[in-house]
Length: 242
Image 1 (tube, rainbow, N blue to C red):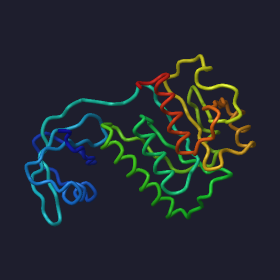
Image 2 (cartoon, one colour):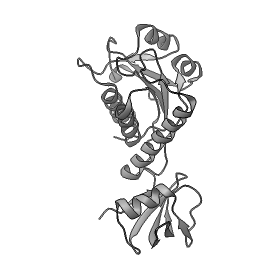
Image 3 (spheres, rainbow, N blue to C red):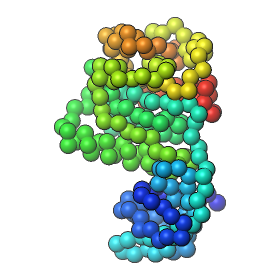
């Protein structure tokens, strides 16, 4: 039976009893409905994971006893940054969830010409908190012990000006070739994906001037969340660990 995996930020030391934070406690006590004595796996995002046993389930707190540390990792040898054009609601959640499962190390939400999401600074912060929670939940499910960073949203020009990854790719339905046409073997790369409606012609031209190469996924037009997921799977199969 697969043990529940719980993210618990902060120090985890074998032999200590740790109080779970509110989100983890609610998941253990009210979603999974675990009782004291149940076995768990804990990870704090700093590497490896820990055996643990549910110690106490109270009305206001849940504690676990931390046991042996295992230095197991599930990270890809290919470090991918996903620069994702911000999509609405569940589409963005899906893109982040699947990117996490497929091993990206960083997600940069990109504000583009066709981005239909316009928020105040306070609401952006709430969005970032939500997106980070989506990534954490995906790590709990897929077995990763290191959580991808969800960066502050950037405009496309700001992102293009700072991206220094050795290989930079963008999805372009007008491109003449796909990943198979690339001869390099990168260790790190950036993948730029447009929002609903894709990147504008001006944005694609700006990306190309910044060193991005256009790649095509085939004859069909994919939704933004499908396109990014498909491209990441291809990249990991080509240079990563799929």
